[in-house]
Image (cartoon, helix red, strand yellow):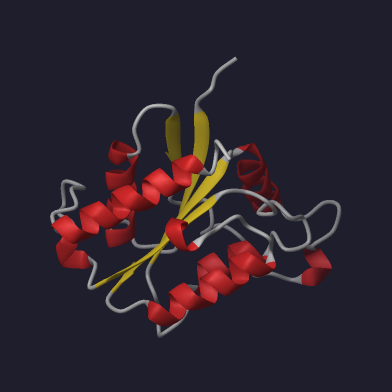
Length: 179
């Protein structure tokens, strides 16, 4: 039996060359042994707009796929920008599709908001994750303001304080699996 923990990475950005994708790649390198990060850039972009009338025993195929990916994951890493002072619509839509099916309930979550500012989206996401019973703590949530110049195109966090903060977050996240 494998002891490797499978982590599903979800980016709130739909841009192919997103700063948030770069942070996910950096974290993939930093997380260390015993953890594997799976990142499908298109996982949330194919979802239909949330509609309670479609949230039935047989929801749309893309929703079923998202829910299965979340169920199969031991933990979730969310890395997102802030758009127009809020949570990106595609990310909020994806989370809305999980409210009735409870995939986030008691699931360890690391939340990174990497944006120009990010405070409002970060606060809003923390509230949403708390309502849906995700296991997210102050130690497993991080706001990286002015995020773009702190990471390079080779997926290396080049700002020492940010690197330390990400490493601390990862340690707290990994500790959630032994509690």
